[in-house]
Amino acid sequence: MVRAYTSIPPPEGWEIVKDRLEEFEKMMRNIDKGLHQGRKKNELMWPIFQINHLRSRYLYNLYYIDKSINKELYEYCLKQGHGDRELITKWKKPGYEYLCCMNCITNINTNYGTTCICRVPKADLNNNISIECSNCGCTGCSS
Image 1 (cartoon, one colour):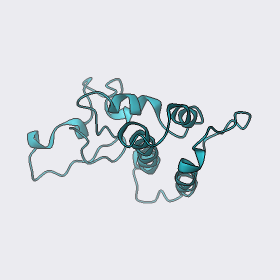
Image 2 (cartoon, one colour; image 1 turned 90 degrees about the vertical axis):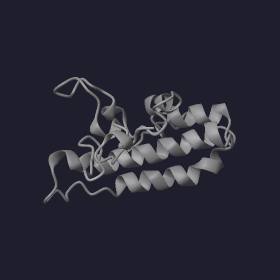
Image 3 (spheres, helix red, strand yellow; image 1 turned 45 degrees about the vertical axis):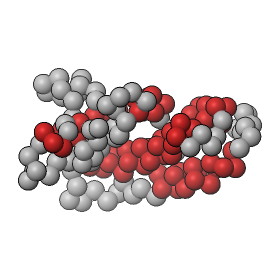
């Protein structure tokens, strides 16, 4: 759950994003971690990564694509924890526009020091093979 700092009043335009961000909070709370039968240990975190991606993409689109919120509101949302600042920063770089999570480009946790399989372009993969990232469940996020 995102801890909101209540001493800072929300800036002008908060009403635009408030309802949608509350929906993401409800989705995050409704994830049932108890349903682990038949699932691998790493699959339990997949819904959390997916919701984090959705709400970060929502803020990114509002600020950079649609330009419907101002910088003050954008920074406020990131400071309150409603979006992933590092992920949004990567989306601005060429080749990372569709990145699913930061774990997929971190090569520290891998055996051979490489990035995740979901970062391989689909043209370079065999069409018959269905890939699924072990970090977040992504089926391919390369540009």
